[in-house]
Amino acid sequence: MKLKQISVFLENKEGKLKNAIEILSENEINIRALSIADTSQFGILRLIVNDYSKAKNALEKSNYVVKITEVIAVKVQDKPGGLNQMLTTLYNNKINVEYIYAFVDCTDGQAIVVVKTENIEKGINVLESENIKVLDAEEVIK
Amino acid sequence: MIWNPKAECMSSEEREEMQLKRLKKVVKKAYENVPYYKELFDSAGITPQDIQTLKDIEKIPFTTKTEMRKTYPFGLFAVPEDEIVEIHSTSGTTGKPTVSGYTEKDLDIWGEIVARALSMAGATKKDRIQNSYGYGLFTGGLGIHHGAKKLGATLIPISAGNTKRQLEIMKDFESTILTCTPSYAAYLAEALEKQGLSGDDISLKAGIFGAEMWTEELRTNIEKSLKISATNIYGLTEIMGPGVAHECQEKNGLHLQEDHFYPEIINPQTGETLEDGEKGELVLTTLTREGMPIIRFRTKDITTLRRGECACGRTTVRMDRITGRSDDMMKIRGVIVFPSQIEKALLSIDGILPQYQIIATRPKTMDELEIKVEVSESLFSDEIKHIENMQKNIAKAVHDTIGLRVNVSIVQPGTIPRSEGKAVRVIDKRDFS
Image (tube, rainbow over all chains, first blue to last red; front, side, top):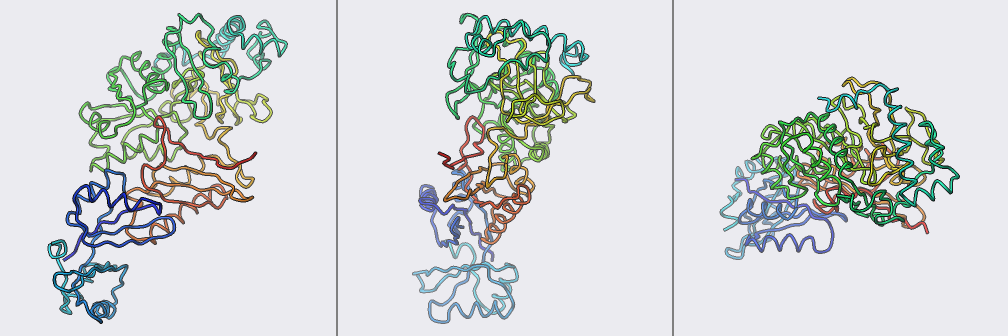
């Protein structure tokens, strides 16, 4: 199951991140996971939120450039080696990872890993064939 | 359609005779009614009687924006103030504004030349003209307004800004002609696309764009996205406003309305008059204006004049698209750079919008050139390396064009300041004092 992530272009300047987050807050959008990739000039803010199209519209209204990207969400054990098993599976099947970030879900002591592979379909197939649970949108944004 | 065949298709003998008669009259009027011109003539040791041929105009010293500013606000008016019926002014971004005053007859002539321009663009009285130039002291809005009235077309005086409403009116009123700055036209096209629509979903057939410099690349871009024929309009507040020159459908130079304006090309360094076909600074003289006659005004616009009958049938002289201004020409590390060259380079890359700004700095002893480009949906990628590649491609395209290494920054949309729909293209932060 593919998951929709929103990517936001940010200038690497004071207040730019806060401003984007503020817009989401004002529109009552809940952020489930977040990561920032940055260079000295700009950054890409990547978010998993409860309502991606609402978030995209709100940000675009305030002149942000937003893209919807498909990613994979996987549940792994929150213990040593938890992530390694998944990465090994991808590696053995020659699936390139473009980026990855994770958050811990306190309710069941498991970690949710968001991963962007070069080929999303293939990534999902490989993981599922090794019995690694790929989450659907509802399970992530609940 | 040719709006005024008699004026636009005259033989050159006929035209020169008319110009000389009008020049003598305007020179006399300026000398007798405007203290500034009396002093100017006296200091050059000439009188209006010294003007006996068109070539004699070269005896009269130039007037620049700086001199005009000294007469601020009404010092150049040549008629009693109760004959002035409308006033326009520049925004004064580079200093004190310059003011322009019009009599009833001046407004009539302005309407006439804009009607000629609208006709060249393909407009007739059956068209609906969405006038998205700003209304107010700026000559863009009301200039088109006077011309559309003269033409008898249906005018939609929407003025500049409020993009959402512009598109709504464009669709609901089925506007057929759009008039605005080229950068705003590109922005409207982008906004249309964002709504999931294209040039096929609107009724526009032509656009009249000007008030800022633009390139052939931007024309192609706008024509494709809005599915229109885009033509270039030229004018300036000091002389009249938009309509001084305009492109016909040949799109091979702008026909200058020579029965009302006398053009010369000079070498901007020496002031020497150049031959037709040579590139230099445009100098204009008004031949019929009553309220504020202007003699040998240095426009700072760099262009070339070309003689000869155009395929459209008009015989008026054609000026090339403005490629630079003698004052926004920058010297970066000794290399002469015009913003239009950078625009050309940027638009050669797919997905780049004409929203950019050029910033010159001198951190120590070396000039640095930074180019800010607003990110667009098509430019933005979820991956850092794609954006960095885009920066590199932009820097390379600019380097290939001007031969200088530049720093490219990608900025968020809307961060490049705009005034009256005109984008602020160049900022020179170098301190030469």
